[in-house]
Structure formats: structure tokens, C-alpha cells
Image (cartoon, rainbow, N blue to C red):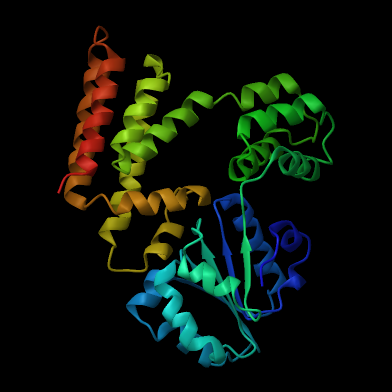
Length: 329
């Protein structure tokens, strides 16, 4: 049975099935739902798995379902990053779930997806697509999250709306900054504009993500269209360097639970970056990460030691080199 996402956000109790598939490109909304489900099931034992873990051990999920908890009557099981590969396992254990609940989480699933079609065709299963937010939804979230703040004017709402571009994940990040900056719950529009004036850094983060995924087409497009400030060259290099170090730390422990390692990274990886980080991991090994870190260090020395060099040209060439390195065999 298919439900609208807004109905689920209003009332989790509409989900009667033991197996629930939640999918879509609205990562921010899906993360909100995960938190609500966890809170609503706090008396149950909550177990978090990934599809990769289950595919490596096809008995993992059914064993978790069959094994009775010593302290809780039921289990709430989250399975992350699912796609059609898990369908066979789900079909085989449908009758095993008992009083437990299994929530499957996926990114966008095409209409031809076998997993999506299976859940849509069964009355005893629930499926909820989460599409991107619109302006109305974003404004409602702003009003709810900042309702206790003085100075929440139409101008403030429009500033946040324009800055997040209907991206709930980015909006939640902005609201987090506001709540931590305006501790006396009074918003000053000029200070807010300064607080949110990080568009250039955000734009460079998009380049960083494309470069480390080895996406040449997007990298070239962003390098051509993004303003890269010469005065922030060292900051940009630091952004690349920090991500490389995180990739290296995970790669060093690749034999262990990847999601657990990522969750324990210090400083922590912001949750909306995790899908991108996982894709970047696929393109790098320790040897090439060390080579990239070495190049970052050399470029930083060149920029710091020679004031006459064209930092913009050097930085752009460096980005292209790193993108090519991400695709090296």
C-alpha cells in the first residue's frame, strides 16, 4: 500500500505493515522520519543494518528476526541503502517477521525497480516515496522550527528559502546555525546575512564532492561556472585535505563495519554527506589517497611561498589532477 509522505510525517501510526519501504531523493525528510520512528519505537530493540552486510551474510536479517530479545518484546530493524538486490531475501522472510518491524531505506527508485514494484503491488506492505520539498513545505518547516524566535519576518523566511533552494537537509543545517548563534532567540537580519554568507565555500564543496567521486563532467562544469577566490586557496585545499584524511581513515579499517567506522569519525561527518562519502570511497585506495595528500601538500607550499603565482590556475589544475587520480586504476 502506497502512502503520501506528508501523511506519514503527520502520523506514523498509519503504517500497519511489518515491512516498510521508504525511498526518495529527499534525504533531509527521510532522516527526519528515521528519528521519529526511532523515538516512537524507543521501547523496542532497534537494530541498524546495511544491505551490503545482509548480502554478505544472507542469514543475518532472518537471524535478527528469529532471535528473541532478552529485554524487549519486539525489534525495530532499519536496513540502509537498499535496492533490487535485496528483494529475493525480503520475499523469503516475509512470513518470518512476526511482531517485529523492518524499515527499508533507499535513495530514488525508478519506476522499473523490482523492489519498488513488489512493495506497491502488495496490500500487506507499505511504501512511501519522499520527493523534494517545495516552497510551501520549506516555509512551514522554517515557521515551526523558529516559532519561538523574535524577528522571524517574511524577509528572514525568504532569505532562508533562497539559501537552501528547497533542500531540507541544507535548511536544517541553516536552522541549526541560527539556533546556536542567536542564543537569546532574537534574529538580527544583518547578522543572519553574515552568518549565511558562505555560498562560495558551499559551491566549492560541490566541486570537492565531484572531484573526489571522479566525476569529470560535473567537475569541469563546476570549475568553469564557480567563482574561486584566490584569497581562499588554502581554505579550499584544507577542505580537500580533510576529506582525503577521512577517506584514508575508513580505508585503513576496511575489514570492519564501514558504517560504524564512518559514524565514529572525528570530527563527525555530517549525515547528509554520508551518501556522497560512500561513493567517494569506491574510487580510492590508500596508495592513491597518500599520493593525493602529497600533491595537496606540495600545492600548499607553492601557494604560500610564491606570492606571484596564479593561484586560480594552479588550484584548477590541481582539482582536475585529483579528479583524474580518482579514476586511476
